[in-house]
Length: 148
Image 1 (cartoon, helix red, strand yellow):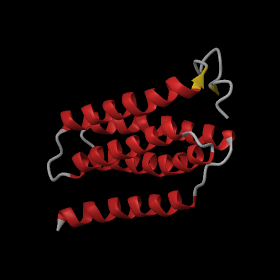
Image 2 (cartoon, helix red, strand yellow):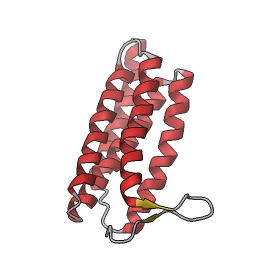
Image 3 (cartoon, one colour):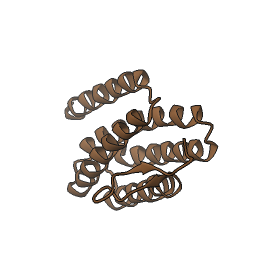
């Protein structure tokens, strides 16, 4: 019975994320920048939640990332950037794998941390290397010339 009361709110949050995500469409560079900020705002709390064993909280952040990546997939497809679409699809696959680890009856914290690190490095890092200029501190992040 206790599991029921834990899972129901989690499923409601994920369902809400899917509904909101289905409505979100990223079409402009400004919207892309907002999604990137939201992603940064989800990755940190996700990693913190995994580190503290709050796996339901981590799954909430994974749901946010998933909805954002679905919007990014449409953005890059509209720009005809097949390599970026492939990176985003790979990211969605990695998020699904992470979510599966987190959804286990007894999640493996080390495996979840490794999957989260792999997601950020392979997905975020790959796209940023191809398409992003700036360091986010002295120089704001921008698209490399000719990307859009």
